[in-house]
Image 1 (cartoon, rainbow, N blue to C red):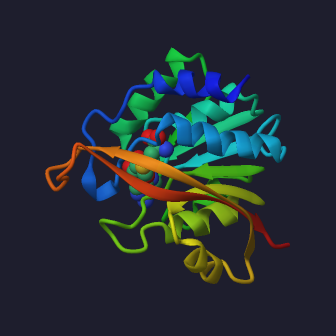
Image 2 (spheres, rainbow, N blue to C red):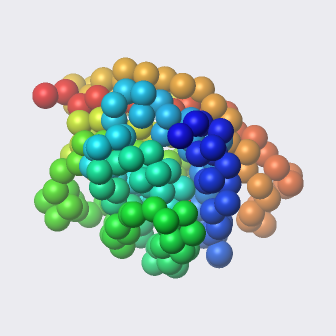
Length: 204
Ligand code: SAH
């Protein structure tokens, strides 16, 4: 499949029905999701791999991984309503994804889920709750040797320091995240946020 085709397919997916600001529910834009997934595909981290999407929301990343030939895909999400949207989205594109309702902050989660080859995620950026992305990073490193995650641009020094001794950043890809007016505190119709996709490789 070509990058453009994947992007067009992901563009068809439904958004959050009632987005919750406290959970920072912003659907990953299709072009950004496709970009992350293709980078992971090129690094042999998707095809035939067991993939986990942390905070999968509407399922965009998880469904994309399934369409690119992952062996299995699991989506973890705290909000059950979002899971229902994700399930409908997976049906729409005939993608085989298992969605699990769980909190990534639960320390028992890795032993419950087992291990994966690759984690893909677009965690909360911590705009509502400072460092909301930390438990996502911890959970990702516990689950898989390779992680691809979207962060605010400029997060590299923090992620590097936070994962010191545990993981190494082996790739950094810049990108844009257009956020549509969603919540009352948004003042513009669309606000574009600069982001970066980081590939983290766990140290043995
Ligand atoms: N990739 C998703 C967007 C993710 S936005 C999509 O395209 O729809 C971040 C997601 O993390 C939200 O869906 C939010 O509900 C979820 N989330 C926030 N805190 C969480 C937690 N502690 N455990 C699991 N999911 C969480």
